Length: 223
Ligand code: UTP
Image (cartoon, rainbow, N blue to C red):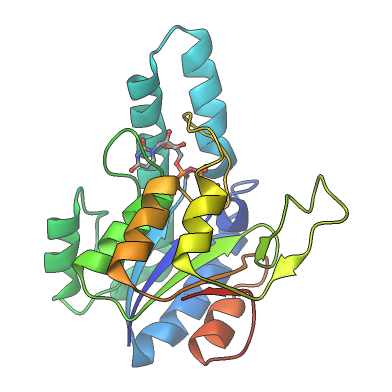
């Protein structure tokens, strides 16, 4: 299978701990033995810190987006370092470059691309561009919920939903640099039009990637 994985900042970047990058790299190495794997990594809390300071300094939204893109690309460099030889040595700047890098047989790791979106959209567009069979998205909980489970105790986990339902759910949320949403609205539209199945899984345990790829019923399937 050809698999695009969006590794959220909350899953891997929190606290900037080398061990966390290594844990993810070990799982990605296992996946890459049997599959073509492309990774998109988010900016996480360091991106938010940089964006907040830039905002205080008067940067406009597009510039804040470039700050976020820069941090996500730095995170990609860290994961590339953890993957060593099996990784394409630098984060591609766009989808065409990523597509070409994929043909080297190496694991491609990239961050953000252009202002006005998040790395969720990057992952969805990359999945469409390379004709991926599956898009995986890690999150800080264990799937998509009816409301934010960290705020609303009555929130219920959704096991399965359609891309249309995802689009409706995410378009209610405002888009600003560093904003938190279950999935980027543009990314959701791309998931809908590309018809690539997506599974939203918990990022706390990197092994969830392997479980999802092996067809274990975890997270939320969007199909
Ligand atoms: P992220 O995609 O990391 O956002 O990009 P996030 O919501 O923090 O995602 P997680 O938590 O890591 O999964 C960080 C910021 O970088 C800018 C946006 O401002 C985004 O909020 N960005 C990122 C872009 O402008 N374009 C991109 O292609 C990617």
